[in-house]
Image 1 (cartoon, rainbow, N blue to C red):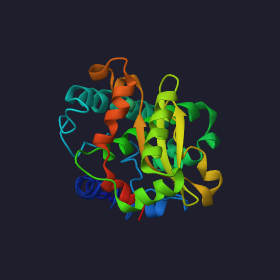
Image 2 (tube, rainbow, N blue to C red):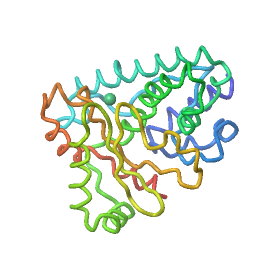
Image 3 (cartoon, rainbow, N blue to C red):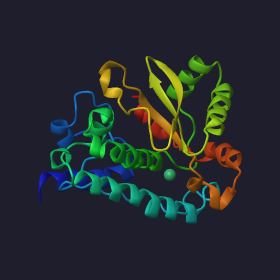
Length: 250
Ligand SMILES: [Fe+2]
């Protein structure tokens, strides 16, 4: 078994235990850029990215996110992003050993014939891989995050209100994000499958640390909430994995 497979096995095992915590060791130490701050960086296996199994069941987020939505979202939508990303990278073998983070940090520098596909489908793979690990019922906001939120927004309530407003303000499909940058929490929104790390490699000292993202594509909520995005957004606080955010803030 080669190193890629060994490290992937390690990743799959450890994600169930510590979420974003362990994959920092191994291959990406050789391959990822020096700007890497993401411990959940995604590496291809034998030149291909793979859909990572969830560390919980599709029904684990009921009643806030229903099992059917999770099954389709992970098994169909996310899988499609992975497939399309791999199809694009076949055209560019020299990129097939790079981490997804490396590709996205400098996405505008990629060859034009694959740039938009990597942006859309590579972004989709990164965003959803991050999203799944951000979800869990029953955790509580930790001290590090709550202190930062109070410092950055005035209060926890104001932070939540601002995040919900940003999520509701996205026209069409996209994401709202909470990132840490320069010692502050900031709210980002992005269209389609864009995210805060895209092209952030241009300024390695100011790469935002993504802490949380909410997928506001209709596929994330339509089966349960129909057109009522506000219901999905307000319910989202029940499934945020605050423990993971504290790990990211270490
Ligand atoms: Fe999605």
